[in-house]
Length: 341
Image (cartoon, rainbow, N blue to C red):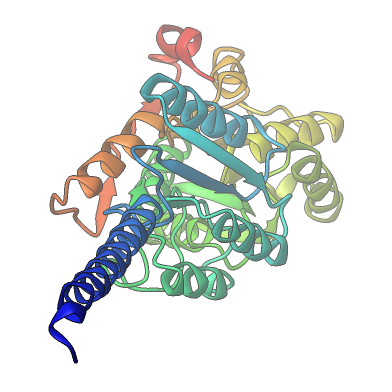
C-alpha cells in the first residue's frame, strides 16, 4: 500500500475499532437490562413473583357458610389491609376438588405466598405439590394436611384439636357425674380437626365407664344439617339420649332445636357440649341450653401475618404454632359474649 493511503487505513481501522467497541457496549447494556428485568420479576424470599416490594398473599378458604369461617376470612382481610398487603381470597364452597383448583388459580396469579385452610387431610396433596413446584410457600391455617412442615409447607397455625376434645369430655363428665349416653355430631369426614376432636373426646370419656357414644354422624359443620341429623337420631333413639357432643357450635345449636322439637329439654334432660365459642353459643349457655363450648379462635389475621413477616425475614419458624383456647360456660359466658364473633 502507498504511503498516502496509510492515513485512510488508520481511519478505517479506528472506525472499525469504534464500531466493535460500540457493539460490545450495546451487548453489555442489553445484558444489564435483562438482569434488571429478571430481578424485577424474581421470586423473593417469600416465593412467588414479586415486583418491587409488592407482596401478594393468597388465601384458600374451604367454605364461607358459617360464622366461624366468615370471622376467619374477615380477620385475615382486616390484618392484610392494616399492613398494606394485597390478599386474594378464594372459596372452595365445601368441595375438595374445587379447593385444589383454587390453589392452582392462585399459583397462576403468581401470588407470593398461600394461606391454606384444608378441607381434608389427604385431598390437598396435589395443591401442595403444585405450590412447591412453583416455589410458592404455603402456611396451613386451622386444619392440617398430609405433608411435612419445612418441606411441603412452612408451618401449621391452629389449635390443639385433641385437647379440645378432651376438655369437652371433661366438661360433660362433670355435668353428668360420669354417666351419659352420647350422640356425637362430627365435622367433615377425612379432616384433621374431625379426627382429632373425635379422638380427644374418646380419650377423655375412656376414664368414665358410665359414658359411651351411642351414635355418631357428621353434621357437616352446618346448623341446618346438625338439626336434620339430630332429628333422625332422636326419632330412632328417643329418651335414651342423655348427652350430645358436637364438634362445632353450629351443629350444637341445630341439635338443640331438634331436641326441643322432639320434646326434650336441652340443659336439663340432655346435656350439650361443643367447640368453637361463637356468640350464639355463648347466648345458648346464658339461656341454659348449652352447657359449655371450648374456644377455637377463628381470628388468625395477626398470627398469620406475623408468621409471614418472620418467614420473609428468614427467621426460624416452628413446624406448628398452637393457639391457647379458653373454655366458656355459665361462669363466664356473660363476660365474653360481647367480644364473641
